[in-house]
Picture 1 (cartoon, one colour):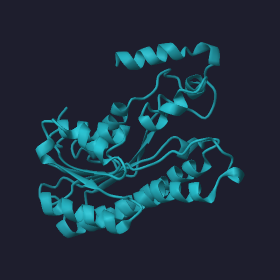
Picture 2: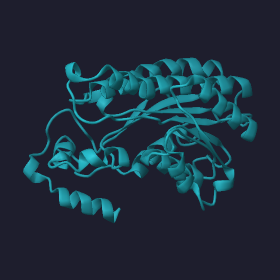
Picture 3: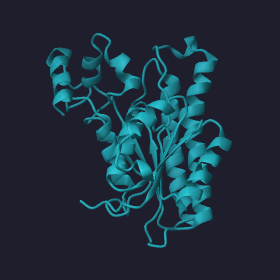
Length: 282
């Protein structure tokens, strides 16, 4: 299916992580021009991009999303290089370990998670809207697209990670507000939210390696498998497409195997080895 992403400029924050790299590869394969930001793991992002056929149309920048002035600089550099930014994916995020009740959690952990996950997405959205106001709508009539990366923790909660849960839940309020604001800049611009569930990335790997973790994760999912970063990237590409999703705004798409807030399987019905084999086959 033609997605209409070739030649579009997409800015992705947190592009050095598992989902971020999958996003870069997916948009690059579609012919998009890429602005990829990283904070502490720029070397990993450079390695991911090295040798890719689209490397010459990718701009890699160091940016801390908790610093609005750095985000402004990144968007300005993107416009200087490519003229405009058509798509923005607010992907930067952290998931601190270990599990802790709220009353046991340090203030520093709470503040850092909210600063990166919630405030970082807010600053990213603000700079995207500012850049869009400066460049104006796409002359072809393809509306701009902002995609927020949330989490099932924002919908169902997550014991031991209250700060992460609220940081992702807040994105829904941002989504429902910005869909009404962005059209004042671009009448066809859209804002949507992708909610990944358990996804096999470097950030989640240690938690999934704990005994019983895979079974617990899958007990609320009819599809007894874990997501890959490519699964999340596919959902983002759909929302970003001015053809496939041209009339979809203010919506959230959960990529979590049908996860519900109730148990669907007994733990004995889930074979973690089979899940790992499935991942390797994919």
